[in-house]
Image 1: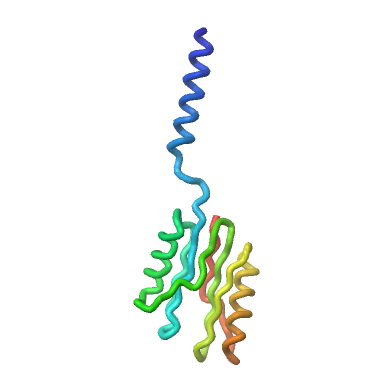
Image 2 (image 1 turned 120 degrees about the horizontal axis):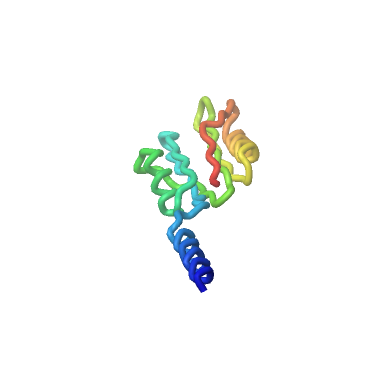
Length: 124
């Protein structure tokens, strides 16, 4: 009887810890971009999509920043900007290298100059 009470108490304690633990896989992100100023903000690993959008917009720092894309769990986002001119591009993929490649390809479609990766973020 004593052992059964200890097992039940241990089980209840384990359930309490699991129920109150913080979420392990917060994984939302976003890219905000202002085409007129070429300012950008890239967020990752936020607990909600709304928070990810807010963080990206705040980092971007302009009233004209618009959310270009959103990333989810285990997804990466990247932004590339042309060194001269107005070209830029964004990419989101399941890994860092693919996101960078997508951003570079998108940027190169909009400029004759060289593009450069400016930021990459990956969610857990």
